[in-house]
Length: 361
Image 1 (spheres, rainbow, N blue to C red):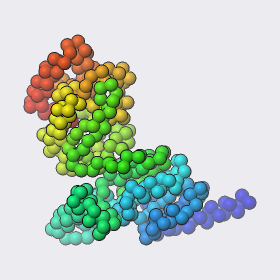
Image 2: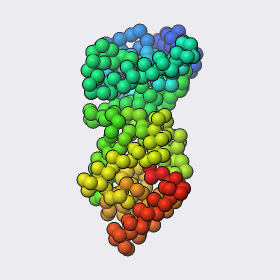
Image 3: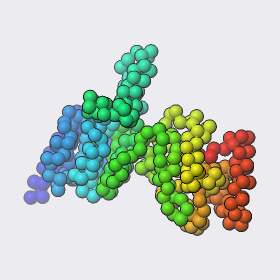
Image 4: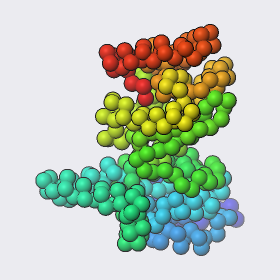
């Protein structure tokens, strides 16, 4: 009986490998084989021409351990719904492997296909139709009706963020055949947040005084769904010299000027008018960022209302350790002198921003 099962597994493995090589090549087979043992677990293999939703929904989910989708997910209708279906089909610790033509790969495809002088024009047209229209309320319905959401322009950060939002943990990714391949592990049920903001103005959930969550306004400088992979980026690349995630691919190409001029921070003045923020104070952090701090600092910083301009800008300190040191110094002064110390820190920050160009972001 054991020998019969081994033969069956061997034949199934050969068949899977043959299809994968035919559609993706040896590199894709190598990537997939490094993620899952094809011969040991029940696998659904979806080819680039298959109807994924139908094949998944009609499968015996009790036997499924791995789903491999060789078709670019740009052409799957309603990505979030599709990822939730994949999640519900897999057991805990089930593996989903797929690919996407990300923004980078689509640009490269245009460069390979069209004359150089036409590439920028075609890319701009494609970006407006398949990236801007789906996000603008006036054109969203029309775009969905005519395109069925099948040609969506999506960034690497957004696809990983959507997967994380759908209850998956990222375990691997690689660029091959002008596609971005990913491997993820089911670790939870999908996030129940349905209206994830993807417009230019964001309202972000941050920890404030007393450990309560508040909504902080900001102009978008990151790709949609980026907030769901902050811990992944930090764990992968650490922090840079100014205390921000290093090599942060979530940041859009056009956002550097916004950050240099602090334009992205201006909507926080609405939070100041509402009474959520002070002009100066410790930065309101995400849950992950807050929990990355030493416990004593967590307990001390929630005694006060956060602010737009953080202490490290006023004190000219950089790096993750510099941010922590600056907050400790500021909080000691805040405790001793009260809110009046904010005036001193404000003018110190203004001086540093003008003369040394320290970012408040």
